[in-house]
Image 1: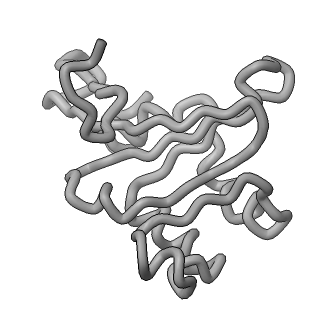
Image 2: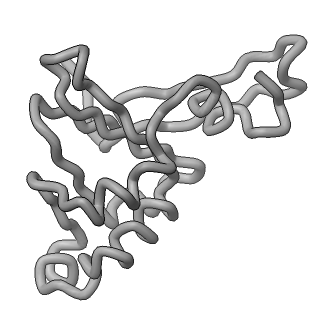
Length: 129
């Protein structure tokens, strides 16, 4: 049982090694769904270096996909989708989509987790893979 819930589900880190010269850690709120869905929440703006992770189709390994991005990148996606112009965003600071459009899927494509991307998000691209 968690002692508290402040939105961070995981902390990913890169330890000191031949690949990195300094310890680096990033908080990760993780949203998982058996279908497809994504949400953006203004509450995460208070976390430095946050990585938002969204996992789709968790029940089917053939279809499962993970998207991960910084909080700022999630806001750019939300602005591109015009979510930040909605009453829902203004009233709650949140916007959720359980039925992603082709436009949204295209905007998320650069954030699809592929080999090396997690490392770059946590340790930084200059740390090497």
